[in-house]
Amino acid sequence: MSINSVAVFCGSRSGNNPQYENDAKQLGKLLAMSGIRIVYGAGNKGIMGCIANAALEYGGNITGVIPRILIEWEVQHTGLTELIVTDTMHQRKKLMYELCDAAIILPGGYGTMDEFFEMLTWNQLSIHSKKILLLNTAGFFYPLQVYLQKMEEEGFLYNYVEPRIGFCETPEEIMEIIT
Figure 1: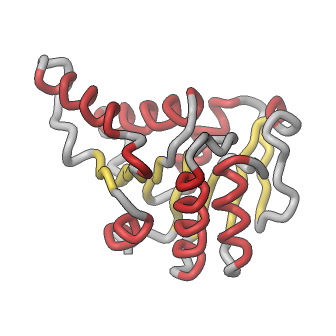
Figure 2: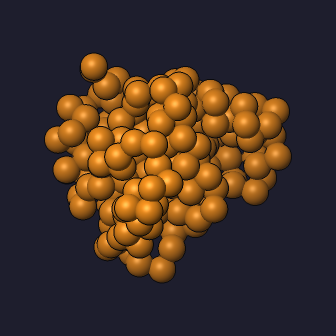
């Protein structure tokens, strides 16, 4: 399957390690240079802003999807290729899933994990079969990887974790998988 569009789920904050922003910028640049559209949460701060601004700098196509309630909270980006405003968070997530061929998860907080787990659950239920890749910047997702393996080992999953999720160490590794 050809990947023309990726949903990127990530933090509206930058986190404490500067490498999170550096990897987000590099990924935004690489996606733009490869002509892959980014669908993301439309924020202009944190890691969200980094990936969007880097992609725009390199001529990228970026669709932001934001619910009305978050327009001020996430400081809506005003320079995107396309901005879609939804009424609810659920509509936002559903539309982002529909608009993408694969999902990339970068470090983030509760919202990022919510989006990741919903995408993963829908994959397990065969609602979609889109690739889900986590950018494991500075080992951010190692505890999650251990937790998912524990769920598998203890018999709580219907299917194996590995075919559904890819843990990648660099933006370049993500690009190798999706291009």
